[in-house]
Image (cartoon, rainbow, N blue to C red):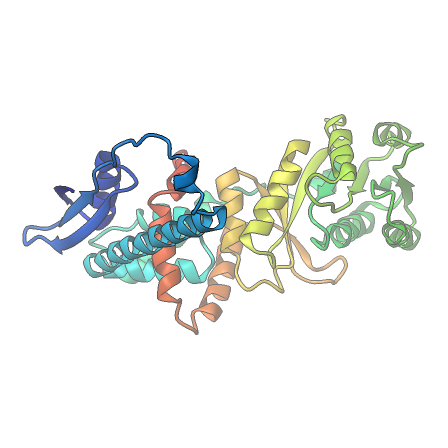
Length: 384
């Protein structure tokens, strides 16, 4: 068995150094804080087993595939437990050495901010500042990191398509944008288009809106392509396109994405429902990004528990937020996105979540993940 003593300024750096010098299979046997500052860990790496010749059929016939699978599963469980232990040691040292930063980390976690962005924000703090001063600095840094358009592009006209998962609020958002424009400029220069050619309810919802507003409504189908439909609407100043919310890999989804790519004059916006989990938001971005998404709309803010996950996706993907919606009221419950307003809302929701303390396991996992897998995401923050 190989033993190695490693010293570093903190547990996270020690873990990274162990991994770099001894490989992912290394294990930490002990750790201690040094009187002069920093930590000392003793790591071990079991020697590689000698290569043995292939076993004969008689030697292996007694071991079934199920048993091999069970052993692999057990090894993975041991590795997971070890990683959790290392994450716990790292968080314990961080919270002991930097209690104010740990409080800020916990607040950001309550807001739903993932580890990679939290680490970037916590790095903006200064030792000589108070907790309140550092908290204001962190929130200011978060607001500066959120890309926003800060104007109302629909009021100037154009062609806009809303993409996103089913239930993201695309049709309701189009209703709000169209109504606002009609109230300001009239209905003559507005048209609504839907690419959802296989759900009758989608047609009827948009047609009903068209009748109420007195605007043209068109349906894209096998006989009328999006490109042809837009050509017939060339005299309209504003065209809003509602798309079908389809799962990744669905034949209609692939067809819809290809059709949208053929219309570069159309700006594609992604509707991100803030009530969804981070995995759902990332899946929506991955599915729709190939269509050429240029901005996003944060929807269902009135029903959301946290905003950090959606804001982090916008920051990480450098996807500007153009509007936010916060209710079913048409046309009132929509506003041009402002970074400071989004941060204020995120903080208010985070305070509600903080009424129940954040689970230590969640803090430990977020802190540990941000130092390894999260480092690739953090690379996208370097330009901020």
